[in-house]
Length: 395
Image 1 (cartoon, rainbow, N blue to C red):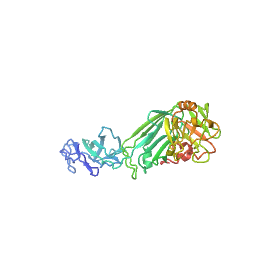
Image 2 (cartoon, rainbow, N blue to C red; image 1 turned 90 degrees about the vertical axis):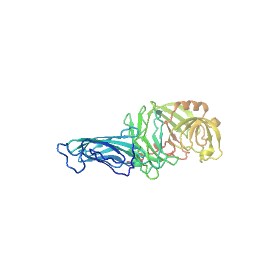
Image 3 (tube, rainbow, N blue to C red; image 1 turned 45 degrees about the vertical axis):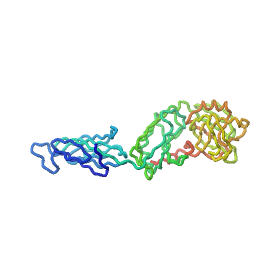
Image 4 (tube, helix red, strand yellow; image 1 turned 30 degrees about the horizontal axis):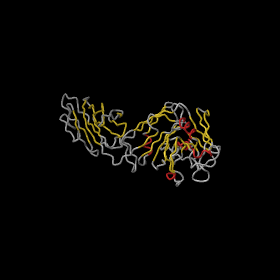
């Protein structure tokens, strides 16, 4: 098929001896030349159909003069349909979605002239490729089961200036009509990020779906275009687990459906400096198992460099819950870690099996270095509900 640059305006004159543009192919039945009188006994002049030059980020439009549009069918190069709506009176048609950069659309139009004569035309239109493409990373993973505090989180590869335009394309549906809101923030990496969190913790068993129909949406500024759609979904665990950490009493308590099922003596961050722990609500991001922990990666010099078992990440800045047998004499007695929540090997093994990503850790204590920031892992629960809703670009 022949391709025409989007800047060229294409007018489809459906004629008996059809004179075609360089990017068009059409068929017509017994049509007359524009402006000529219909011959005796003919059904009348055909409609004059125009496909507006399509451009990325704009809906595709078709209009008819001297008649009405009977049917418009638009498909992309992969055979996917671009649906649309015909205006009252049948004089125009507009696609529901915007044209995407780099796409090629075939437009087939059946129009009805003033005398009732129907003609069909077909044209193909190519959209210029995007100079810059924006991509994203979704969390949690598709088809996962998560704890009651897990937000939907999207981190963008490139800056997003047109936040309202992007947010309009993000549709969250839940199995129980959960109230929630998007909130824009800066990820710990420095990138733009938008999270969707419920007003309160998820109801156990809730099913969540995200449809991000971003193809053809412009990030704005230097962020570039989105050239694909995204879809993901997850299920909230049937059990509501909350981990409460009291750094004053040096105890960690696991609540399951509101009932305490285990209490563990722990040792938190050392008071009086950079080794203090964070407080507030952190969300278990990942169960990472046995990993190397190096103090230089979190700005604590050469304080430690060791393999650590049963590691459970709570923040991007390096706070974990994990086994810490070297601190055994302090469990339940003193906070003497480098910021993490340490416990014995045996307790860590059992605790590791009890929790899952998305479970909230509600941490309190006088000798802490502040509240977990919203972008340092999943700290959105430390923002009040009114303040969180105000972070939406559509407020």
